[in-house]
Length: 467
Image 1 (cartoon, one colour):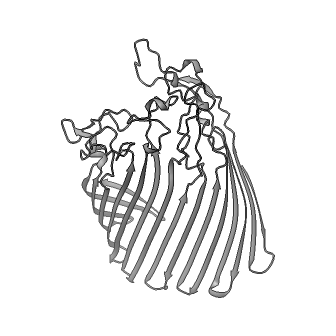
Image 2 (image 1 turned 90 degrees about the vertical axis):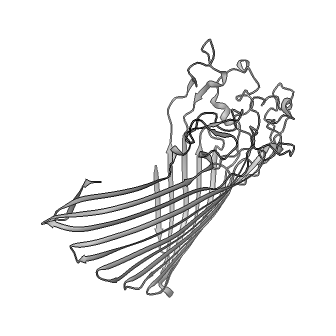
Image 3 (image 1 turned 30 degrees about the vertical axis):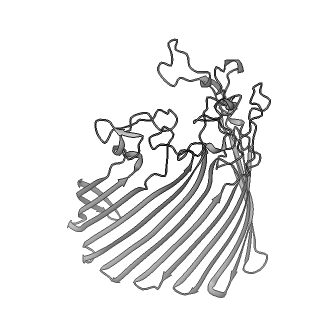
């Protein structure tokens, strides 16, 4: 890795900077051919499937950043304006996008209109070009011969991932981000700071229909994908935070915080029978149908919110010797999924029964609630030795449809904490036992603790005696 920067001040109050950075990772690990085993006994003669013949590929990459920045400081409000341009190019080996390039524009502003008020705002616009997305690349990880294929899956000579899918970290992306910060410091007992952040990523990659079997000696060689992008399509985040500190007297200090986070995302997928990649027409009207049937697509829109708050304070009962501290925080979160398409209905629009093996509908919201409180007393014992006595309370509640028996596919087995998927599908859901709410149980905890502190001059050492 290496970098170079150059600063220039051509006129008063104007600063210019140009920079160049490059990082290269050359992965020299040799590729090896493997035929891995996924279970102890796959059949009577101990062999494994032809699709288990895989190649370990050494992924390497390089990144290059070039850009310029300009900052102009002005006397009014003791502020500044900044503008910048950066181009980032990333090369990758053994990935669907061999090289991506992104142009990033930045603008920022700082101002102090009043002696007790400071403002800061930033804006970023990024446009990433994923280049030519080659959905064939994952096929390079197989090493079996064409004559070894014993079924119509044959991923090396068809496809591994659906050709309409785009991995969001290397696909086209348009990003907008806004950050705003305001700080109020009066120089007295009161201070306030607030932040706001918004960013949106759009992964629209202009996907076109593909013919993954073109040139293959099969009857469905002209079969065409729907041409609708699969994967993550959009992501949006909004964050707000407020922090307040108040010290009305020398022996009392109070603080409070308030925050709100919201996130939204959209994705599209398709359910198809992987055992008929070479002959999709054979399952054209089957419930679990072909990869070229657009009516087998589904969409999921995620909407999550987190609200959090905290209050706390410290009171010096005996200044410099005995102090009492108390803190309380809460966090309330929920995630909702709006599901549509295949799963709610069959490919022909017929609604699925709730207990059908491919049935899936908008589930109940997932909720996480957390409350934490702490009360402690600090006091001296003898010279250089101090003590702390405290009490901590924590309450956590969870409601998650993935760990409960509310869905028709799950039933309890002996206990409500041991669940089983009753559907017949090996692809839609998990047929293994699920330990249900034991994975993340709700709980209430009470902790009483005591600790000693010995001060060796400038650096205290704290030891917990009892908890």
